[in-house]
Length: 631
Image (cartoon, rainbow, N blue to C red; front, side, top):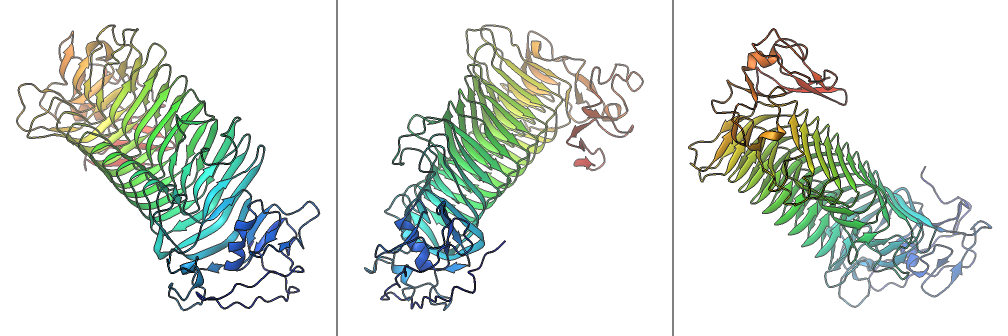
């Protein structure tokens, strides 16, 4: 509920805000906490400016050093709260210029706008109010935002910035490195927590490195205290950013980078129900939500129910929500129920949801119930959901109940769901794609797959780790370049044969109805309506299918150690005919042997098998050729 100063407070601070004005002084009798909730009332831009004099929020201190505590409860005050909207257009003429004192904060003609509050180590409650027409132009300064450093300040302390709207002026915010709408840097100290909840930022932001719509960088390098020794929590719940960001590296719609030298340790992360509508123009490590995160010995990293409507232009490593995430020796790393729409394009490693995800030393990465509808293009690697996912040294990756649709293209490796899916570890390292699909036009010059472009050999002299693809399908088209390509497949472009040991991988209970549009085939190409190249040991003829009347090519282009008849081939009408698995009446062969009817819905005799995902059924429509969704 919005809070107002009690009518008994008749004190009126008459201010004339101009470049030459002298700010009013606080009076000792001034009640600074009208509702006695421990949060100091901020009603004017002048009082907001005074926050810099006491980051702990225990008293209100004006620029002459007057200390006010009247109104604080016996236990003392512990933070600040807005009690009305505040506007940087101080004279109210609708124009932000040098007639507004904050436009030239230093009063020296530099016209750099607001000077960021250097440190805030206490709660800031917005009460649903807004700070409007924010202007900061400090391109040569680092740590730029409403606040330079936001931190809990000491061990075992929790703070929050919440229920606040920051509306930037047409000039926006510009800074050097560590630039964010709320804070340039966030630091969480031992056994503490920092939360941003229901914070909305709108406007344009520019910087160089570590630039985000809300937070530039999460790091302990810039805190007065030593880096976190215990377990700490960073929570971002129901926040939103709408605007444009221009920067160089570590750039995100909410958070630019989460990193320290060598990696950020001890952090637990929870991003829930955040939303961005963002245009980003940057060079490297870019995400619509989070640009870069490298953590080790971390707690759980949970990303749930986040949404992005994005237009991202990059050079290297860009994803619709996440750019680069690497988690080593930590807890769970989960991305659940996220949704992305828009355009993501660049040169190297471009993904609809995430560009590069890496799991190592016991960390499990889970992507579940993720939805992407986007145009994704790269010169090297592109994937509708992910460009590159890799597991190493007992790390695990699971993609489950997820899908990507739209258009995916790359001049090298392209996959409708995943561009490159890599298990680079040793025994005990596992990668799984389960209950997922791609409905996309996938084009490329090297390795192209309707679902996955490339599954490379682990290159290990240990027993081969596992890569499993099951209960999945692909639809749409796979388009080869006129310039030639190496491998193309309706489901998988290339599944490399291991060098040292038989593969532990398996592909089962999956099908492809992707149309292969390949033009004139180079003599060196391996092409199949199911897979361009795949080890015979990983596929089961009785459990995988292609439609014989969709493509007139073999199901597998090259299968080491076996012929190309490894995949069951049937007419579309035959594949649609069964209404239950293990059907013996629709074809001379048993159809969908061993398939699970609790995972697949077989519909009526005119419908292809549909995947059941979270109460919906997804299947290719034989009449329209489009994706059908049934509820």
